[in-house]
Amino acid sequence: MNNKIPTGTLALTLLAVVAYIMLTEITLVFGPVVMPFAIYLLLKIKKQSTVNYWILFFSFLIPAMLFLSPLASASFIILYIVSSLLAYTLEQKVSQEMTLFYTTFALGLSTMAAVVIMQMLGFLRPLSDLYSSFRNWYETQLETVSSLTTDAMDADMILQSLDLYFQNMPAFVMIGSFFLALYIVLMVRILPQDNTKMWTYRTFDKWMMPRMLLYLYLLLFFIMLFSGGWEESTVTLISNISLILEWALFIHGLAFIYYFMLRKSMNKVLAAVVLIPFALLRPITVLIGLFEMIFRIRLIMELRRK
Image (cartoon, rainbow, N blue to C red; front, side):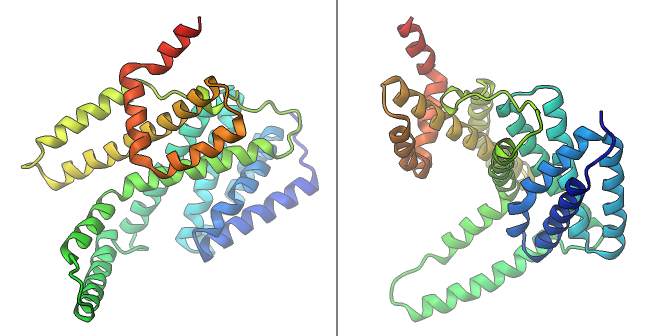
């Protein structure tokens, strides 16, 4: 292992990390855009010298905690959590699909943990209070709009939908983390590497979710049918887990549709274009993924080919 880090690499890493922290403080949208580049450079340093990798961590963390906002410190810690995880998956030769899901949970859980810690320390108002204020303001806006229009507006249904989105916020954080993890992994993969072997790659048509997810999804579905008298926190937890599983079935359905089209000798570019409407019509794709898992259509097609 070479302990000497090139000056150019170190300077670019410092610039990328500072840009990531500053952009995250400005808006949560711009920070993740440069996140893969910072992770890519951190991985290069980690490969050359683990000691210098952690020296850089504490050199940034201490000033960030003393002089910057809690959001900056939290975003920097999340950056290192993801970088360390990706470095571990490369060392252990983990497949790209598993790396993607490990990174998803690392991003989602660390983000939620950061929010909870900032609430506990008083740096952030409880999300329930923020949502309550927003809900009251939005209800006032709905009443104003309904009084100006002649068409009937079901304000209660709109507010109930809003409540449901807030209750399922942890699931939406995990779903958003998946897309961010996908962006990070793909960007790190295509950036120039110094003889570093990347994750084992499998084409999207070969993706298959574990069948255990089907059993868990069906179990939670039947539990929800008899959850009328349960506590709201329990129902919310089950609802969040079900939503995450539903998105796993959605990805499984997309992969199967792509697999089916390729087995029918469709051009890959055309098959990718056909996937677009299925990606937009998520409920239909979820059902396709559900039926494929139940009846094992892919396995039947493979056996027929033999």
